[in-house]
Length: 401
Ligand SMILES: Cc1ncc(COP(=O)(O)O)c(C=O)c1O
Image 1 (cartoon, rainbow, N blue to C red):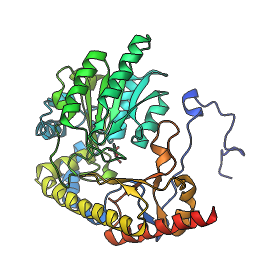
Image 2 (cartoon, protein in one colour):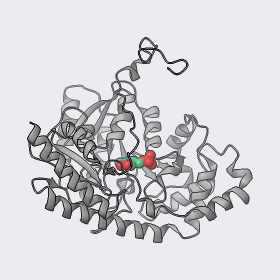
Image 3 (cartoon, protein in one colour):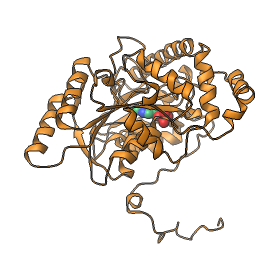
Image 4 (tube, protein in one colour):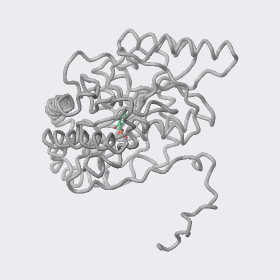
């Protein structure tokens, strides 16, 4: 037993109330030969070669890259991000940009700044599973909002807000959503609904958190202006990330908000400032003009992966109904009612394929026959193998029950 490890996993330690009820999910390393259709990882052959920018960061910018950096991020990168989101009509100054250790870190800081235990947070059901975990750690109470093919159901939202007001319950503090290529459903919220949401946020006094990691991963169709581009009152906080356009491992993302929110957020940022080395590398990569062609290539690759996955599903698992997102990383798949995707999980693992069961994406109990498949990480031939194994696992589950 390792030094300091208590015999029963440390029960009796004085954990905080907010973590005592959190479930622990250990990460299991990927076994050689297993096909991962689980996490939204990047396709390894297309991770960019960052050698030149790393060398530059560690030589020309050594004193900056290896020193403590500014809390709010490197000024050049903040300026670059302000311009980048400006191309999508989000009008922010560099002072309205905070550099963080990935979008999830940004969400954590939003919770730290705005949520008290028991505060109501509006989410779709299903929604991004990691966001649910972050909200749970802040003891948020989930209020579910419906969604359809046009995304967030604004009539349902307005009914809920009105009901709460009439019954004297406090307005929710914030609404969280992935408006472009929703994770996991792939749905994109229409422009008209985005505008109406901004109006509702002003009327009922809640914040909108717009988590937008997949905007550039569009394979077809026309992009919709970010919700934040319609916001004139500082009610929308944007979350962006280099994870999906450069490399997830660098852990660099951003928050766009009012100057006041950014200043407050920077002051509760307990890392004292994100890593200057990775920020410098990313800035040099972007300013050298590498980003645009890279993102273009990525979107092409992921579009092909999506088509391959849809094709293999139709062939091997015709009973499955899958979304056909116009971009992003995932398919949201419904299996027959009798297939419980939690029970399927160990069989799939034994057959050498990984996915995420739908249950992870629901704020409360939900249907059991959904799963999320990521097509980003695996190659087309691995996707074919993974879907064949998944179909085999479904057959095995049927036989065993
Ligand atoms: C909706 C959503 N937000 C954020 C992220 C990534 O955040 P980060 O920048 O922390 O890697 C992901 C990645 O899977 C995501 O799907």
